Length: 94
Image (cartoon, rainbow, N blue to C red; front, side, top):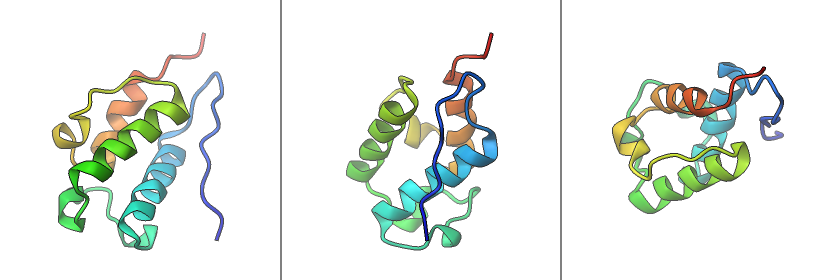
């Protein structure tokens, strides 16, 4: 199964693309199928610890070219919440 990708375009990723990419990244760190991660479930319920949380934040920043607060995954502990924050940080297309 290939990993979802998020392409950096002027329009930015769609919420669906970003959700799929982020879920896959988190699933990789948790060593579980992405299909088993609910977007409305707090990630702590899956056992995502602080080291992996900071790693995921760094991956988001590197991949999408945004800057996020290191505490974003505690402030928004679900995939859906993170997607909203990330989309708000992405530059709007001109």
